[in-house]
Image (cartoon, rainbow, N blue to C red):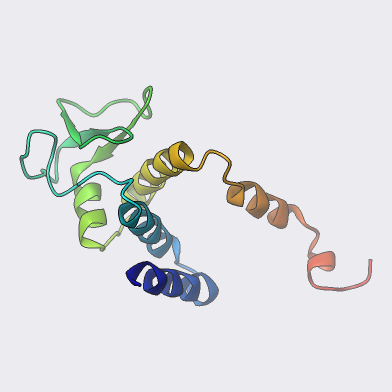
Length: 140
């Protein structure tokens, strides 16, 4: 039931709010969590609370691993995420462009692993390329 409530909320945000990216990222995380595919991001792999100013290495089916320094983007089989972003996802209060981009990379990695044949991104790209006159129903 809480997943259906979250789906209703995100659909409303997609239809009515031009700033819906945060709501969509949080829905993706909730979906992954409800299905049992998201890691516990309340603590790191050693059981320590996440630090807002630290970097963490996120991999599929693994708890956050603290990094000694910020890596240069995406490395093999995982993504680097700032502790503050993980805290925001955990509390459901995702704000800021950096946090949105990190959440997108994290969620995409997890969704691509679990749903490798997902076609939503391809469909959205096709819709964006569709001529406006055809989409609006105007004759060509």
